[in-house]
Image (cartoon, rainbow, N blue to C red; front, side, top):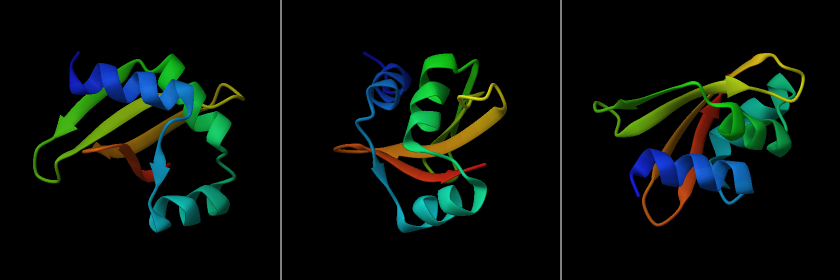
Length: 83
């Protein structure tokens, strides 16, 4: 299974950790864990960002609005930020 497949599977299942920055941005932007899960479920664009070693996942939140999640994967999927 590729990294992107693992990330999408873990996002959809809600098996991810939040960085302090991501938790702060979620509060500021009214993004919920369920929104991140839906983004994983509806992801239509994903790119590896070699400079930072992260992945950019684009999908939709529960309201159908565009949601972008930046995350990394090591021992677990870690959400870095959302917008």
